[in-house]
Length: 155
Image (cartoon, rainbow, N blue to C red; front, side, top):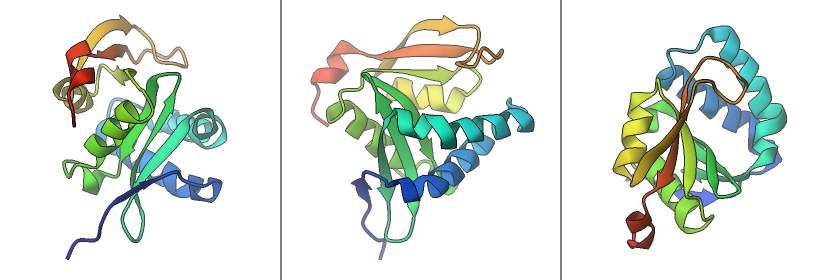
C-alpha cells in the first residue's frame, strides 16, 4: 500500500534534503545548464533562496518528494524529485501555492519545455520574456501569469 502524502512547512534542518531534491530535479530537467553553474546555484539555494520564500514540501512517510517556494504572489521555486515526476506531486504543490499562498505568477526557463508545458496545462499563460536569468546569465526566462478564469475554478 502506498503511504499518504502530506504537505507541510519544512524546517531548517530539512534544507540539505531540499537541496538534494533541487539538484536532482535540476540535473534531470535543465540539461542546458553547465555543471559549474548548477554548483553555483546550489550554494545560492542553500544560503539565500530557501530563506527568501515561504516553503512548502510534499513528503511521504520517509522523505521529501518535492517542494515549492512562494514570495510576493510568485512561485519562485517548484522542484520535484525525478522519480516522482508525473505522479501529482508538482500539481499538488502548485495548487497549494495558488489556493493557499495566493501565487499567480512565476518564471520558467525557456529551455525547459516540460516545465513550461506543465504550467500551461495548469492554467498559466506566457505574459513576457527576459533574455537572461535572475543572475544575468544567458538562460532566457518566460514570465507566466495564472489565467483569470483558472483563479475562479475549484480544484
